[in-house]
Image (cartoon, rainbow, N blue to C red):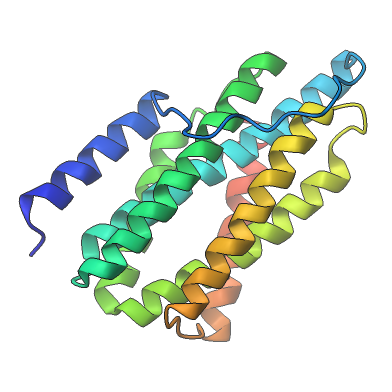
Length: 208
């Protein structure tokens, strides 16, 4: 069973994530020069896409927090906690950009968090290799998703594009680190189910 410290860390992470009280350790990425002003349609599109990205970071916090809680390997717990801290930067960056765009975070964030936490806890209980495999597949899908958003974001929205590009680079590194740590390859049906769940989440968060 987890000791008290991991439980307290998990509770603290949950409260900070859902209350919007997360703070980045790294400066928010920004373009070299500010882009042109966005029109209303561009602002709405960027806001919807960045809301989806913020939801992804809420889920990342839940996933890594649950995996750190579930593992019995102290070194792997440190690995998950370090990744979660970097994902906290993403969470704060996307939240800041949403404020700048005049957009709101998803009203369903508690639901997204609970679902991702449960999945992370289950994966961690099955075994560390499976838990790491889940990270590899998740980061692979997130990287693809962020590349798609780079194609959809308005060309004029240089600020959002800078944030998404930095996130994409971090996600690729997290996936590579999990692979190097001994990740198992997830079965094809599990990978398919993860993609379907992600589609439901992104399509809903785009609007709500």
